Image (cartoon, rainbow, N blue to C red):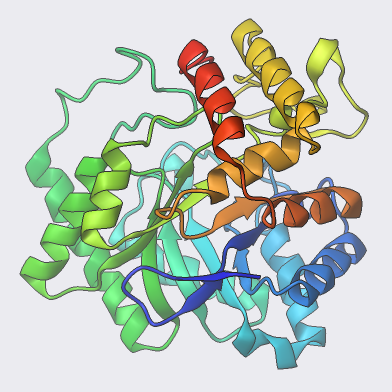
Length: 350
């Protein structure tokens, strides 16, 4: 296993981060235990979760993934200090969490305390803001005019950023959180947090996790420039495009128990004609060069030096093993040239 520096911190994290959002719906406690044990045995020390998991989220299951992690840690306390565990506070729009309100300072400490209690740990290594309070181009809102920026008040946003960072600082000083980070952010948000943390001597956002894959590569180059120059760790989520880059949904297939068979909060927005065409071409490249399309997709994410760690998820052990093995693959110039052709043909397929 190879490791990367986590932004400005002194933490070394595995190039693979184990995502957990299926734990509690598609995966049981026993499944999660097996995944954790195997991931740790392969050198993975980085775990990502969120208060609203599992996904698809609902008021009945909110927090269950953290509870599953807590159950594991309660029986494996000796492993806690060697793990880097991240969680997140959900933003606006979730009706069963804080009345769908924004991330406000008054919610943060109680949310941290609840996550720590569910995970049966005294501290989190990284606590993240799951998505911005302002309009943002994530979760399939990246097409022209899907969102509107002109109504955003910069002054109000800056005031909220500072107020949120002050409460996060209190929790860091209390020992509940070691570092703080972002999720689903833009170049403006990343740079603004960096600017304000320096101006007010507040904790810096050390990481950002955004959707990034062969089907959704828009973070290059603009978000990446902000991350590299501000030394913010970049953590791709959904590197398999919600599972479709594995090829399992090609030709109208819908495997029993797969994610797309569940009701989706934001819809199955990656299910488009151009996505299926692109995936078929990536699958052909992968098979021609002796790997699966899953491995091609993950190896591609891992090929960039500005990627700190790629967040993977699996519902079956066979998938987890295939995923982890992908990070030993180095794509040569011939394969990269073929991939780039498909990327040019289908730059934004959904």
